[in-house]
Length: 483
Image (cartoon, rainbow, N blue to C red; front, side):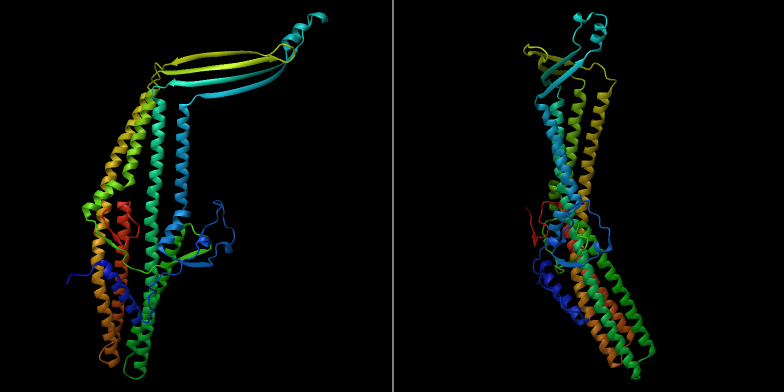
């Protein structure tokens, strides 16, 4: 018979943890998720500039269990960094529309109405007799329609559009990268809460267990079967377990607020983990398959390519300043003197202009050299990211394999520690053991429980890390297979 798979062991894990907590005086583990609840009360104030000013506005009065999928949905809707990147994407698209506007001619219209009282005519009239004097005022209106179009830009127009398209693609990839990173961060924060809640329960059970041991030690001392030293040993063990409980409760509160920050929760809301601790699935890809898939899927690599392409297009724009620029245009205008009976008159102008920069002091070539360096930087960063991605996948893969082995080892350790504590108590009650043996057995059991929980959570974190580093795979699959 071979060893059971890690998924099969998850059932053993739940059963063993339930047995542990029952043996130590704790309650049974919840095996099912709570009923789906409305998440609207958890949403933050829709006004991003809202700032609470009174203590009652930040006092937590809503404590709700949520599943991992619900946490991910809240993060997708409410995370502020995600909203920033979405706004930056819209900004990049507006820049692209601005660049494409160069494909069309520009048309402008002007309308003017003027009343003029000429000082020069007044000065002239001062030297003339009244019959010969001229009218110093005039009322006119004019209108002008102007059309202009850049016929040839030495490649600047096309390069600007392509550079803007690359920036839009980069913004899309950046949004996708942040979404994948947010999924991993929320998943890890959720696992932190799961682990902290489990450690609180273990610590509570350990305190209850120590209280039982202290009660037994006191009873044995009063009956003349034990010593004061046994009582003191039990009191020290109880104090240590109480301190560990306080620390576990503090870690739980910190983990809850960390998740609340990622989810941008309502200022008065807090969340707990509704999902039980269990092995989330198996990773069936080999290390080599995982690395190859990561190189194919990771958006960070494509981002560096878009930055390189954008830099090369900006180089074309810079060099285009040295090329010929051909502009064509025309104007149509009308003019009318409102003080006479003559009908308005119209006119027009058409023409073209060729511009060529003969010497600009080397500004354009220096700008092109900057963009060449930017492209070379993007290429180097591409290679650096490729190496980093391989290391990330390898690190997560090795962690996954070690955690998988640790789960098996720690399950055995928990069973042995539970049996050891039972035997130590029987020996103590029979008068052939000491309180120190019971205390040591309690400590060993708590350590074994903590190790089992830690190895399970580390396994789940490694799965989440592989899903992040490989990308494009389901977030919480029961079984991950080659696409």
